[in-house]
Length: 126
Length: 126
DNA sequence: AATATTTGATTACACATGTAGTCGCATGTG
DNA sequence: CACATGCGACTACATGTGTAATCAAATATT
Image (cartoon, rainbow over all chains, first blue to last red; front, side):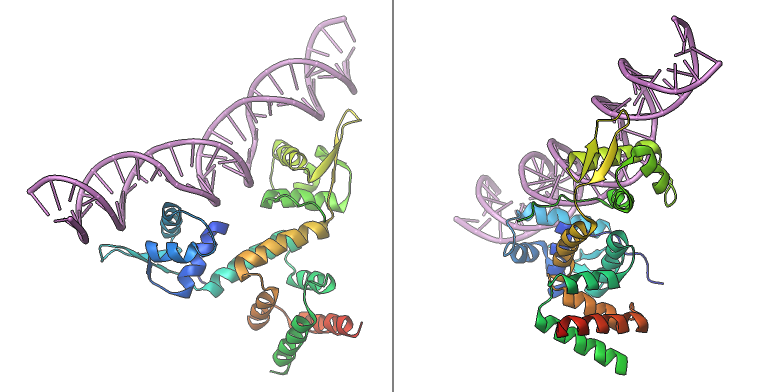
């Protein structure tokens, strides 16, 4: 089985999302991207990168003078891990319950629903 | 608009789930239920209840000698709040992306998929 | 070369969270 | 009534997280 993925905090997710778009990147590059959505200081971003590296969620190239960082897991892997623990905590493990709630609460648009139906159709006829 | 629901931590969710099943309950009653799933000491449960009360997620009846606790929000309200922030963090806000991933990953059974389809059908014909 | 700047390493600090323990008063018990 | 027990109030303490700042060495600039 794939090794357990460490917890990724909310702020760390922002950083990961940037690294999943493009990697490797220097701390400065990551900071530039991040600052489009947030007002975090470069030092803050650097701390997050260091923590992610320590947690072994990102890797670091130290061969160049200025280090570059890259993800050690795919976005899908991390999403799946987070979602599983989230669903367990909040919905007692039943993804379906969540979807049902969202469908009933009109959180999904007509269009979303159509798309979901089409995805489910494809899946079932496969 | 409904006031913003405070963050509920993982351990606190366990407590809330017990209170949503039946309320009000004394700390002892909650502890008994909780200890079926966990090995938390009564003091731990009490601390969680106190924190939830402080956060105003649970209310406290202090009229009796032994206090009783009860939820101030429904489970649905809390689920919705948590899910919204979760989806935003992990899936960039698109619930659909998550469902798609889970459908494709076979996290949902054939049966689940059938049920979802039927729910979507009902929704659409409404 | 002297100085300014960049960058990695280390440290800071408050608040949240998991996981309890202590203390003192109100109550039940013998 | 004397004492044991239960419960609320407060305290504890390590680790995680958000949000950086400081310091020293390497590098770029003038």
